[in-house]
Each structure stands twice: as structure tokens, then as C-alpha cells.
Length: 144
Image (cartoon, rainbow, N blue to C red; front, side):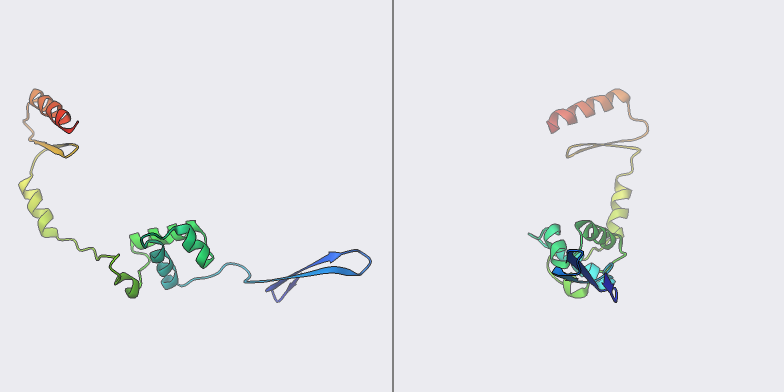
């Protein structure tokens, strides 16, 4: 039985009209709607060191999967972390300096780049196949 869509009532008793137990369950009906700021704040809270997503979900009455979705939205830029949380030392502003990318691209102009562990082999279009084999073998031996 529902009253105003907010309260559930369960009657437990015999069919003779007497009621032996009356249980009233109150709580929000349906889904809880959170603002973008609330979602971002909860997701940011889950990213703090030593905090688990499951604990944050339990604390705020949501699911882990919902928090993971909000975290993904923050990474994509669809949710914005509040300034009060973004100012904490755990979060750092990401700044892309295009000048360094352009400079390294100009210096490392090659047609082929092979990475083995920490070793990078760069070769031009006219590189000899046998030389490349020897360089790859040497890099693998050094990386082991």
C-alpha cells in the first residue's frame, strides 16, 4: 500500500481482520537526482589517497559503478571538479606546452621508431634491414 508515493505499509496477520504486526517503511521513492556539482564532489572524494570507491558509494547511498561513471565524466571534461576540491594538493592542473612537442618532433624526424624497454631505435627510410636486425638484437639483450 502506498500513501502519497512516499510510504510503504506491510500488514502481517490473519484473514480474520486482526493485525498482529504493522511495518511502516519510509524513505525516498524512486531515484535520487544529484546535481553535477554533487556528482563531481563525490567522484573527487573517491579519488583521494586511501579512500575506496565502495566506502564512498556506501557513504553517499549510490553504487560503485555510478561513481566510476562520474570519474570517467570528470576525465572527459563532462563534469567539473569544484574549486574547493581542485585546490587540494592531490589535484594538479594539466597544462600542455606545445612548444616542447614541436621542438622534439623537429629533432627526431625519422621514418621508423622502435622502442624496446627504455631503448629507442630511430631509423630513416633508407635503413639497411640487417643493421636494424643487429640493433634490435642488441637492444633486446641490453633490456634483459
